[in-house]
Amino acid sequence: MTVEKPWLAQYPENVPKTINPDQYESLIELYEECFNRFRMHPMTICMGVTHTYDDVDKASLAVAAWLQAQGLPKGSVVALMMPNVPQYLPIMIGILRAGYVCTPINPLYTGRELRHQLNDSGAQVIFVVDNFAQALEQVIEETNIKRIVLSKMGDMMGLKGILVNTVIRQVKRLVPKYNLNDPKYKVTKFPEVLKKDVIYRFKHPKPPCSKKRFCSTQAAQRVCLRVLF
Image (tube, rainbow, N blue to C red):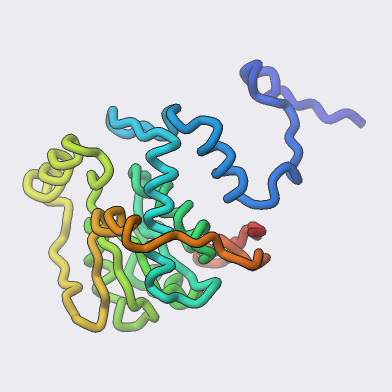
């Protein structure tokens, strides 16, 4: 029996109709090959700001190096609570490169939903955009979070990012007031993470491990993607 696949007719000529799922042993292998092959090509474009594969490569290595410097046990869970902003991708890749598990969190979650996912995943570190820091503040006492990395929407948009952050905070007032100054939580601003790639040297995790690398909990289901290092 032949199954029709009409969508294939819409594929551009350079997009293969089939792929070999065993071509790469891990997402990291795929990403690193792309970083090397397309280094100066655009990888992401947001609000007219372009980041090349090289930009994302270096930023993700900085994130990975910073995470490793925190002394987290191998296989620790790191939460990522952001919308689709330029820093999302290098943070996600950096978590994987460091040898940790990434649990992406819907930034629109209620406090109850956020608390559930943080506890269910066992996350100890969270990267969060300050627009949603108030929700984190409301539940952090009931979680295992020990380290917080605060980011602003425009952190990776250069000069345009300064304008974006100003409009979001001062004009549209989209950043609710929050207080995460309790000394028991180590709070770091995301730009500081990017500056630490010289101080903290990234080490590729060895030996390879086969634990899950993504974990996302939603109301009635858990989705885990196994990615081998």
